[in-house]
Amino acid sequence: MWKWLVLAAMFVFLSLGWTNSGRAAQVDSFAVAAKEAGAPVYAWMAGRLENVGKLDRGEAFEVVGEDEQHYVISFGFVSGMVKKTDVTKVRPSAGKRAPNKWRRSVITLQDAEVYVFDRGAKQAIGMIRSGVRYPVKAETRLYYLIEIGGRDGYVYKHVTENDYGVPVLLYHHILDDFDEPFFRSTTTVPFSQFAREMTYLKENGYTAITPEALLAYVRKEQLLPPKSVLITFDDGLKSTYIYAYPLLKRYGFPATVFMITGRMRPAPQPFDPRGLQFLSKQEIAEMRDVISFESHTNHFHLSDRQYGPYLLFKPYEEAMADLKASKEKIGATAIAYPFGAYNGRAVQMVKQAGFVMAFTTKKGTVYPGDSPFELKRQWVYPHISLKQFERLLRP
Image 1 (spheres, rainbow, N blue to C red):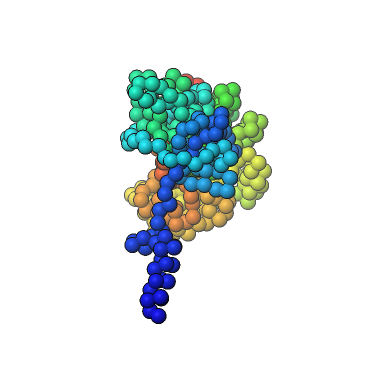
Image 2: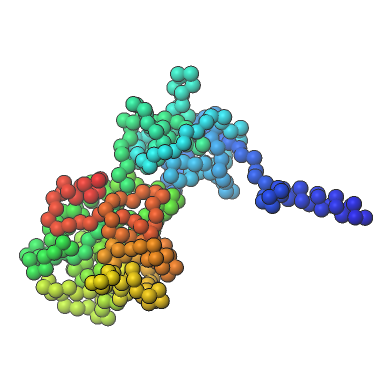
């Protein structure tokens, strides 16, 4: 009797596919090849499923996942999807892949063929659509080495441009040019300058994005269009309502305000350019058609002469209470560190408070794979030229 029990147990054990380590056995990898004229590749870009490339007929590409209708392949920063009806299963390619030692990417300027070389002969295996951000593994004089569907391939350099990352613009206070002398500082931008900069973005085809879109890009879940920018304002000043909001609405540009929620007013204040007034609940509600509101702490936008910004040294319980209060008041999921100051403890507290991303004042642009809790921004200083503004967008 016991022999039959042992045999039955062994059968169950093997049928479940368990290894000696106690983990489920790996399913043998497989590849797919396009039928007929090729298989379109789809990926998410800024919330929309877009055609981002093509697999040429008869070429094998490694499958890394699947759903009911698609096989999933690696496609640069993101997962590419091909319809199951467009491909057939084949054996994986035996070619070796070069290690990726670069932290560099390009944007295709036109549809870019992907080539392999066999005994000196060049052969196309696929294509990357125009306007796609793609990581580069190495370069030669004429080509960039990239990887598509588990295979190394080459694209001509001349059909690409450098990917400068996504700039996150940082503004604070805006005043009419006539009023600017009343409150001149490194955080006060004259309205004529702000208007020129927004007009430049509009006329040059920039796409203003949301923090959620940036987070998906950082996490390598979605692509972003070539000219993407996140427009942000710190503190939650009434001048955003007076000057920025109407122009942003006219251009259809979403933006984000990081609110010091403890300074949010219960009713609108009269605007006075000789001082600072903060946004009211009514003004915030009115602007939500264009502007999202995130945290800049509740009462912790303060600094001690000896110890520095509050978030860096105040007791854990006090700091957590402030972060949670700010988050709950406006339903925030992102935060900008006060004064741009943060350390390991601040990052951990922000995570524990339930935020999913955090912004600094460190200079630079944002790339896939960056820490979502140490995102860089480009501070827009007053009286800069359009040439200087261009360098913030493409540093």
